[in-house]
Amino acid sequence: MGERPKAQRVDTGGKGEQHSFEVEEAEVGMRLDRLLARRLPEHSRSYLKELCEGGRVRVGGEAVAPKRLMAVGEQVELELLPRHLLREPGRRFETELVVLYEDEWICVIDKPAGMAAHPGGSELAGTVSQAAELRYGAGLPRSSGEDRPGIVHRLDKETSGVMVLALNEEALTGLQEQFRERRVTKEYHALVMGDPRFDSDWIDRPLGRDPKRPDKIQVLREGRPAETYWERMEVFEGFALLRCLPKTGRTHQIRVHLCSARLPLVGDKVYRMRGMQGKGLPPEAPEPDRHCLHAFALEFDHPKTLEHLRFEAPLPADLERVLVWLRAERPKGGSGGGSAGGTRRGR
Image (cartoon, rainbow, N blue to C red; front, side, top):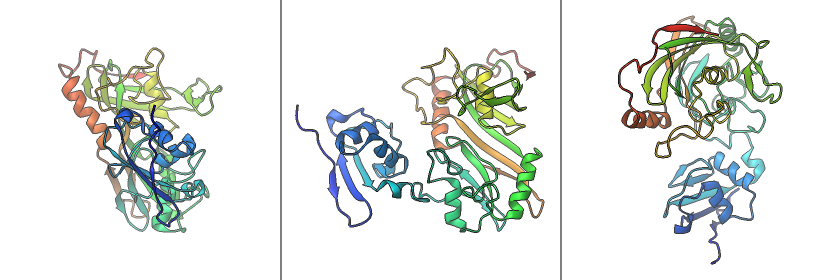
């Protein structure tokens, strides 16, 4: 067996070393993180994964996920930064915020999947709050926490879509009051596995921390009240696109509620039903690298002018590709799809 090829090093004289190589025949179908470990055996897999997640590894000029499968002849480029620089605020996600609207009081953004709202746990850099601080400076309001400048509410890291940021204390107080009093309308689009029995449904089930796994949420009789309304938008063979309007804003609420209704999100590796492990989109489908939940719209009153505002973020390309495939390969005849129809209030 021949010697494994190595990555070519280019010393740029900067803070990081630039490496590049071309994918060979023997490496076709290999995951990117495993390919990097093969080419750069002197570095740990966890460090190489951090490079991928921090956008420091590019294939064909584009940042890609660690589990991307490789094709022959593809050009891989990476920058080896010291770990402390990888975790330096603002280094991991250098893309600018996608701004839908901004004035001197608020900023409304379209958050990409993979970007955490604020630092916490293993998420030390590359968050929305840090990107906001880079854009607006250190004067953002911090009453929600020193590491959460401008943050009014949060979306899960892998959930994309509309978020509103506060640019001063008065705006933060006003917006948080609206969220607390449930005067904000939130609309999500969710791609789920299963066949909805009804055109729409109310899920009214209290939620709380899983006593055995505190990082997970579950339906608990003694939990906090949680309500989610959903309705069907499109139905396919074995899948459906739902419009979800949560009345409350509990952690992981939509994901847990839909799973409890036997409609788990496509791509959700945390909240899955028994008997559905290993199921999901077929191998030939363009499966995204995250759960299929998108915060499509947000409605609230401007904290200064009191004007009622609505902002929408179009479905991102990774979810749109899945829908295009389902429409072509898994259509379902008839608008009702054979369900009972009607609306009910779940318990």
